[in-house]
Image (cartoon, rainbow, N blue to C red; front, side):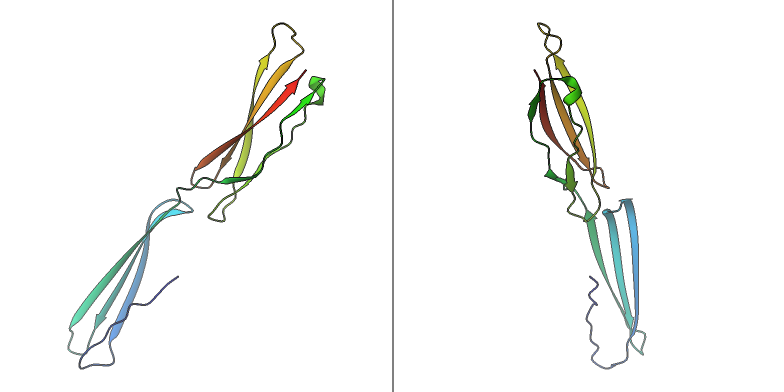
Amino acid sequence: MLQWATYSDLVDENLDTIYTEVISNLTCDNRYTITRTWKIADNCDNQAQATQVITVDDQIAPEFTYVPADYTVECAGDVMSEMATATDNCNSSANVTHSDDTNIDSACPGNRVITRTFTATDACGNQSTATQTITVA
């Protein structure tokens, strides 16, 4: 939200005002610096300047809104591929991916435990993870 600088002059009421805004250090949608500068001059060419620096720095990871529950199935073919969902605090979308780590029971090769790790990543690379355990018995 832009708020104008306030100023006064003891003599002139009509001051020339110049406002500039520069965005720099843009590394992602929600990580950058805004430099705002106000310059004023009166009729006698007396001048003043004020600068405001705003740093926008999203360091908050997305939050999961849904993670599938752990479950047990009898056959490997019954393992479902249900995806988790997540949101981000900066109104940018959170990309959710998953990877599976399978631990096979050596005594009974048909039995296994799948640990499914969901990773939510926002536009600035902040990440959070959640896991689901699927048991094939």
